[in-house]
Length: 279
Image (cartoon, rainbow, N blue to C red; front, top):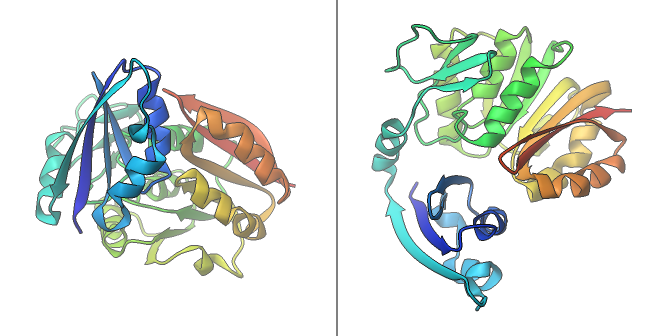
C-alpha cells in the first residue's frame, strides 16, 4: 500500500500546527510527527482526497498573518519499512516499559521489555497516544483475563497486556498487513494468548471482555462506542485514545449514553486518553 506524506511548514507554528493536525486526523491521516516549523502527516494514499483535504482544512483559509507551505510525497510500500527503521529509537514509558526494535541493545533498559518490528503498522510507542495507552495499562488495578485490542497495529498494546497477565487477547485491525505484523511481533515476544484477526467491530458481537483498548481516531471511536459497551462486562474498563485533549468532553458526554462513566484522563503533548467504566 502506498502512503502519502504531507510536510507542512506553518508560520507562525502555534497554535496552527495543533489545529491542522486535528483537522487532518478527520480527513484520512493516521499518524503525525511534530517538526520544528510545522507537522508531517501520514495516511494511506487510497483513503485521502487532497481536494477534500484542502477544502475542509485550514489549508484552504486565507488567514491573515498565517502562511502554510505544503509538500507532498508518495511513499511506496517497499520504502516504508526503511523509513520507520531509520527513525525508530527506543521508547521508554516512565519506569514501566521499554519498547525496542530488534537492532536495539537491551542493556540498561527500564521495566518491561517489548521488542517491535513495526513494518508498515502504526503503534511503536513513539506516538503520544500509544505511549498514553501503555502507561494506562500499567496503572490499572488489575488485568482481566479477556481483553480486546481494537485497531491493534503492531500489536504492541496486546503484547503488553499479555505480559501483564491477560489470558485471552483478541487483537483486531482492518488492515491485513497490520494483522501479519501483530502476529510476527507477538511471536517475537513469546506471546501465546493473542489472536490477531483482520476485520472490524462486527467481529466482537456476542463476545464479552473485561478490558477493551481502542487507540483509533475520534470519529471511529464514536461509531464503535455502542458496540464496545455491549461487549464490556459490568464494571469492565474501556481505554480510549487517538484524539486531542480538546475532544475529551465530547467523547465523555457521548459515552455516557452507553452506560460508560469517565474514571480517569491521561494527557501528553495535547493528545489524550480516557479510562471509562461500564456501569
